[in-house]
Image (cartoon, rainbow, N blue to C red; front, top):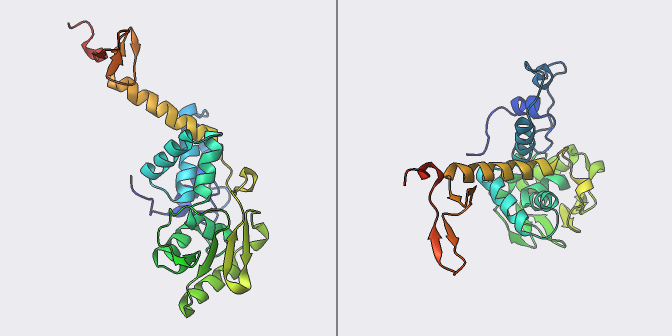
Length: 241
């Protein structure tokens, strides 16, 4: 699934405020979330919407978000917390949170157009993972300075998270540390996102129908007590042998 490039207000009306996507707000009284025809929201929809919040806020494709979830699962600590930290330390998000860009799509454009340096080296990959003590500066070009200066003047610098420092007069940002979860500027239940992908993986495994000893298995192979590999018969073939 490709990155979303459609109307941003359409997403905001459905998922509420996503500061990384846009600073615009829909008109009051035009909120379809409160006009549910059934009056009851399923657990699947709740998990799906939390996942979509992450995806649209950080401007990711479905494949990119799934990749981050898999990395977070292998890391130590809470999968949900690690996932948020991975997303927050992306270079496009660091530039957005520092005030050098008004939105994450705007920050991504600055990175793609090579306006910014990380530790005096040009970084043109939005997914580049910043680290503590990284220094972000702009290329010494008049156009680059004009763009960043305008963004800094328009951004809300009073909400600067404590893991970042911005020296606006020098057009320079500093990554102090890994972000603490309380400074993430998105109202999100990251556990529901992890649950969404866990449930989806389980459903996909069940559709494969691998069956052993009366139970579903995640692999078409199993090991016997003697250490020999046995082929597991898919469930839809059970009874046909």
